[in-house]
Length: 491
Image 1 (cartoon, rainbow, N blue to C red):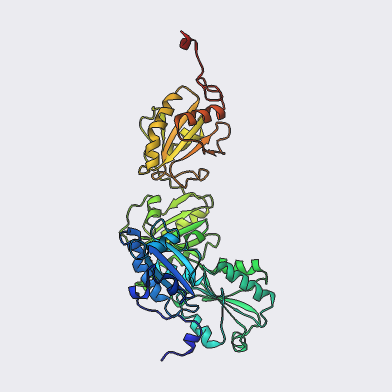
Image 2: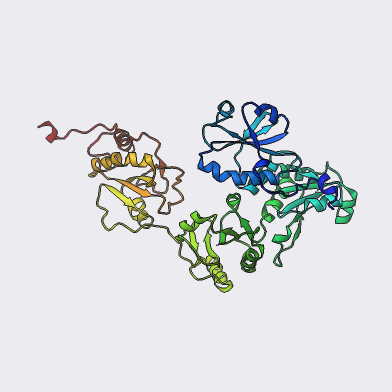
């Protein structure tokens, strides 16, 4: 029989995912139903929406996982095509699915978190209730640590101590990324043997022989000291990198991609992770991680791997400049160790994702690929206007005839009009591309300082911009972009 402490100490028991765990709301009961619940995440959806269909099972699973949570968190949904049309209109829903967080019937904020069950649960727990849970005794501590996540517990004699206050501040800042609890209970302080301290606890599934399962903070009491302890130790020697936390891993980074699955195959997952760890402990200056290859197929594509059937990891690395490197040999501890050693000593050739260099590049718009980027864009003694595009982009397709005409108009000028498929080639880091098309002006005297083009997209807009900004005055246009008359024009 479960101890009553497991309820009193905020332990949310696992539950089977089911649609009935998600409240189905309509215009008629939306406000009244939400007023019955302290914290609710609402999904506004349309039955025909593909993204909604993919989210639904994850959403239902998250609802089941949140049953019995403290503070209580409820998940609900509203069909914007049937009984919830007015409600969806009231809250400005213009796309599906749209998720919003409510405190009773008051909308608190947009939901900008993950779309997988565990990520939804972690994000929502980070949004409500105290950032750090108070543990009243040993049973509460045991319940809090009954998890597959890394946890931090602060043990304090006095809540007004500098360390206690710093711990609370860091917990508020990082509540969406980690689990925090604290205790002033004398029994726990006596058990732990120290008066004021913080500990990191690794869950059983992540424990290994290469690092301590419990790590104690031995630094200062300031917020910066506590923050450093949490962020530097959270992932451990080899972090489990997911789509939700990938941005938290900094370069230089070495990642092993394979079938990472701590739910269905924890033993197999740790088999390879332990081999990565064996090497990682020798290179503390690098960050190491494992990632599920199916979740990061887009990254595998960026490293030239379309598909891998092998059960063994494939390994990629990025240095502090963002350059990419690939372990070309089949994975073994010895090959991996040599790869990381060569990475450390800068003996590896960077991997460049690139289309083949065009055999004929004599057209008015120069085709740029990663392998000829320097030759066409960086080296020439000419100004360059380059478009980064995606083949499937409608705006890019609309721009193509205008851009081609621009190339023809300026064919005799000391200006290069160029384009690059940014989905098939590595883009240099100084050219930030977040959408398509993105254009940059690269002056010939300052190639290291490209300027993002923010002007109009009609032919005359381009000509006026280039005429004004060109290093050498154009032959066919004045500085305002007006055509220059030649003697032959007057005949």
